[in-house]
Image (cartoon, rainbow, N blue to C red; front, side):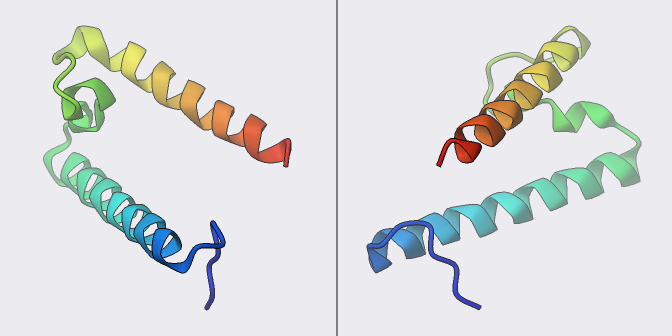
Length: 78
């Protein structure tokens, strides 16, 4: 399997490392959310220490959806 994000092989390896680490991190968070029945662990702002508590859950999920949409939009441009 060859994944090429950028042409520089060293930068490409770092980006793949970051992607794999992020995937593992999200998988762990989803597992914790499932076994503890606590969806608040998925709060993006809490992970970044920008805000915690139920009042930040909805803005957090909206922000993640906005990021996801932005990535889809800009990825389609290429």
